[in-house]
Length: 123
Image (cartoon, rainbow, N blue to C red):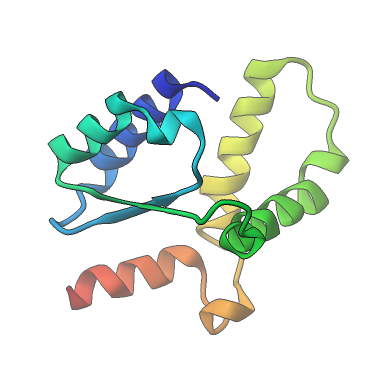
């Protein structure tokens, strides 16, 4: 993962989601997130940076859980032809299934999209 990749990802997220002022982005202490370029981009977007403590495994628990589900439900069932096809399938799984149709017990048996829509309506 490079600084350019996270800068592009942040740009895509901000362009798509159009977050309200006051957004906090929480990351680990990877060099791409602690770079001057990433800090400047966050400042440009009015985003406050928050960092995990060094060596705190609990800070990554949510994403580790997501990766386990992704592997169990998708990755271990498919032989990808190349990077481009894997990227497309991952996008389809996340945006077409995981966020829109897969209910989550931690979200009171709602989909992530339902929760996001409800939060946006109440804001």
